Amino acid sequence: MRRNDWLTAQTVQRMQELLSAITDLSVSSKLKLIGLKPNIDLSTVEHSRAILLGFLDRLEEMIKRSRTTSAGLMLGADPELGAIARRFLAPQRQETQGRDPGLDLDHLRALLLATDDAELPELSEALSEFRGLIEEHSHNGIAAVLGEV
Amino acid sequence: MRSTLRERNLRLGEQLTQVRSFIEGVEIVPELEPYRNRLLEVIKAPAAECARNIILLDLNVASLQPDIVSNTRSVIRTIRLLSTSFLRPLFRSSRSDRICLKTIEWMHAQHSKTKDLPAAFADDACSIAPIIQISPVYFFPCLEQRGLLFQPLFYHEFGHVLYQVHEKELDDLVFELQRSISGSLSPLSQRNDRYSDAQAADLQSVVDAWYHWAQELFCDAVGLSIGGPAFLEAFSAYMHQFEIGDFYLPVENLRGKSHPISWLRMRYLLLLARDWGLDGVAKRVETLWEETRNELSASDDYHGYFEPSFDPFVRSTLSDMLIEASPRRFTPSEISEGGDAASRDQNLEWPALLNEAWFRYHRDPDEYSRWEYEQCERVLAHRSAGQNPNQ
Image (cartoon, rainbow over the protein chains, first blue to last red):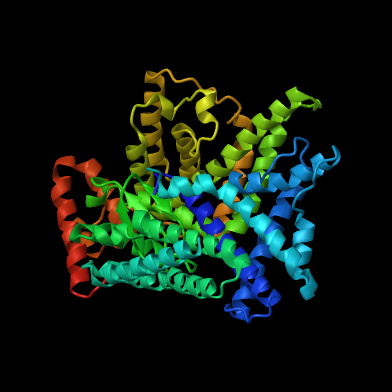
């Protein structure tokens, strides 16, 4: 462990938990789509869904709080998490300039809560995109904790 | 890629079997048994992931491949984390570890939310990996771990564990602190140009620093709450290095700094110590740091990362954080000096023993080593005989 790096250790653990939850839901929805019985039990899937929804709550709260400060500051969470939340702020700013809005938190939440199997392909796609974002932001922390040769 | 993934997961599964054998077979001191058992539980999950990855590969469904890659990556990371951090306490286990393990065991037992966490530590600068989902692992320097004087520094690291178990509530309090600080630093008018973006980035850098710093100051306060004078003595002695950087840093070094400048940490500890009636030790420590600051002619410019106007916000936030996390508070008897020394020495409980160590050290530094050796042997002998006199 790199010295005095309690925050990095916490962040890495949180990201690992999140990535594992994304994979559980993704595998479960893809197997369901092709008519195979998921090899993950229902309670694990529900636990994973709860982890992701909890994380989305946290990001949404940060974004909401950010909008209450005149400088658009990210407050009340570690800066790594702030950087992820900022990615969800950016598309809204960019939308007015006619750019692709990218992954949207409300839409991801709706997909996670959807009960209709017709939504499964879109859920898989959104989870894949979300995983890419988390991996991108967790790389530096993971390298700091595990070390680089 | 499928065959690569299959091969890799088979190898990772074998590696985890070896890890299990190592954990089961390594000779350790009795205080590490709960940690060994915890790790044996923890490694079940990555082993199951490897097996699941192979089952998923056998389904031959192309769309699952990114998930299998992600899962495999996760297992690799877990094994590496075990190797770089979590196996270290077992690999290095020796009889002399037992004093530090005793401190950690005692600390964990003092709080309802940490009482079931196992004790583990390894050699390094004072720090912690507060991963409570696996087990917190403390790090402590080689020299300091072999005596009593610096044991109270573990109390600070324990603060990071308390932060983890109260994360949501404490983050909310830090949010309010960051908002107050940013409010006091924001210019009265906001421009809407590149200059304004730069101002916002500077402000974000200050409040980001305070996310870290608030947790460090909270951990210092936890240390003082548990250890009383012994913590203040240990913290001051460990941190005091005649370094100008303990008092002043240029702005580029403050940006992204994970810990507040040591002088600021001392400042808030001394304020708290006086609030809690520890005037004597506070006076002695303050004199040492003031003299050093004057000797080094350190500037008190913190480049906006700290202003005296932050004081009311910081102090009330720390007070609220302590109420929320409710660490143990030292008792008057644990920090009192005097009485029949011989009978006291046989009955000292852990926090009292660590305070007595500093009293003895100041009273008679030449005799201190002999007394400390006897006390450590007493503690270890009680434990070896299956007794635990200090809980």
